[in-house]
Image (cartoon, rainbow, N blue to C red; front, side, top):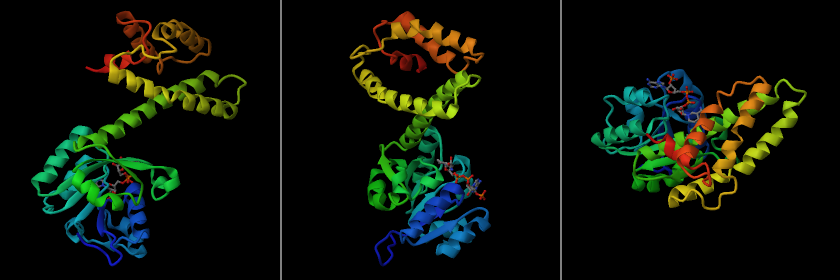
Amino acid sequence: MTHTPAEKTSLTVLGLGAMGTALARTWLAAGHSLTVWNRTPSRAAALGEEGAAVAGSVSDAVAANRLVVACLLDDASIGEALAGVGLAGKDLVNLTTSTPAEARTRAAWAHERGARYLDGGIMAVPPMIGVPEAAGYVFYSGSRELFEQHRETLGVPAGTRYVGEDAAFAALHDVALLSAMYGMFAGVSHAFALIRDEDIDPVTFAPLLADWLVAMAPSVHQTAEHLRTGDYTQGVVSHLGMQVAGIPTFLSTAEEQKVSPELVSPFFELMRRRLAEASGDESLTGVVDLLRR
Ligand code: FVH
């Protein structure tokens, strides 16, 4: 591994889109010697002025350092950009958003080429990079040895969370958390739609909604405990039977407010299905089992 006099690992960043540029800039600002490459060369100019070495080709960029961080658009662009590039002896850290299967395949692809491999899932948007107070972080999975070796360097732009040797796990954690986020966005959209045509100020309503979501968020711990023990009734306060009995109120309210129930109906349907086959004393955890194919 190449070290600068200050013992900071030198590295290469491939891909200077919004995220790649933010990552590269924090390493540069932290004193790491940096080589960058981007398919469209003009996007590398600013970093060049800030002190990064701008490689003329992806092969030169990869050759410049053992640690190579890639942050391209998608998995296909990684295959395209690195086709025919020598990776033997390299430590490839791929922060490109991928599916779990793509990550596993990409890890095998890197190993076949003689590289060690880490996959990453970024839980941050570009303005959160290099801002510790923003609490952004990156999930990493794949070679633990590689992660431990580069932990400090990888921790410069954002926090790090290593989630296992299986290269797929970073992507899986990433997509699981983002999926939960979209479920929340769906509920929030429905809530605002319900009040939209009334004399209720959305700006006054917003903190009520945000506080309620925060208050309900710890319920994920009970769901996790239920999944671990297999007992979905332990400590349940708001049981499934009661919640299913409340569904007509939610649907009628949507109808009264002239709001489509299309975002909430699928979840209500799963709650009803679970009640039809299980105990009304359960939590909502049984829905997880209904979703598994
Ligand atoms: N930006 C965000 O909010 C999210 C936050 C969470 C993680 N994502 C993922 O990060 C990857 C990169 O995202 P990005 O924001 O940097 O994306 P763009 O600004 O669109 O830049 C894309 C870069 O990829 C290069 N590229 C695209 N196709 C190819 C290819 N076939 N060969 C080589 N490079 C390619 C593109 O190059 P150019 O268009 O400038 O020539 C950009 O450098 C992504 O996986 C997000 O899901 C970001």
